Length: 316
Image 1: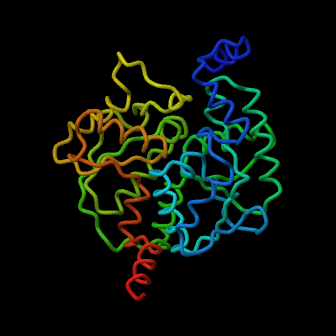
Image 2 (image 1 turned 90 degrees about the horizontal axis):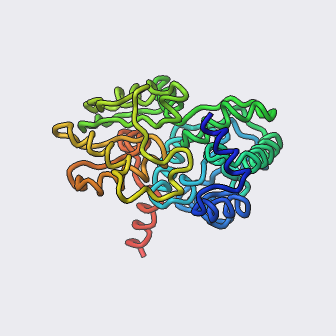
């Protein structure tokens, strides 16, 4: 009902003018950060192996990376970590390189239905030209819209969120986790993974296999609390007179005695929660980490390319 109301406002030309630059960027370059399409796959240069081009090469798994995971510097570290995990596990995967556009979940949530449908139809056309068995994404918003909304436009795909794939690969023994992590952690459920798509258990099952001490937040699973990024809110500033949702969430985490890590499972949650921890004065008391980063640490994976470059420089 709320989305329908927003559509009516958009059609009447009544919407927050601060959304205009984002909408123009989405129309021009297919992403919400105003970045050039050519920059989308630039993170792959940090790897010491080549990521397959799913546009030209058949793959088992097509990784739909998403905007923040592709362009945001902090999220890129998680993206690189996930690529290394997949490579180490022997997963045959590829990406769409500069032809990937935002899947459109938040575009639809703000009420821009025409732009959403244009994005969905273009993305489905691209996906239909590729050969793959399934899709994976680290981005819950992308997961939601490809799983639940693309079928109405003829796009029917088998898709997993990264947390479900990691849980399966660890359970099957494909991903070894020799290092037991001794952190005391809490886990923040992303709205579009937990409440909306019943994806609360796989991340917790992964944490259970990493040796951490998991303490639940007061509000979790179906009763979780938004980080403040959903529904396009990440594109708009919060009213200065109100407490930011991420700060409220970080304050909840700070109530846990001896907390080492606030674990998130979404690029946008990562962005918001790190700001929330800083905004509540908890920086240095506990850190925010993506679930993928914990898996990488448990696997004993390091920044292989950086290590190789360092060794090469020493030899020179």
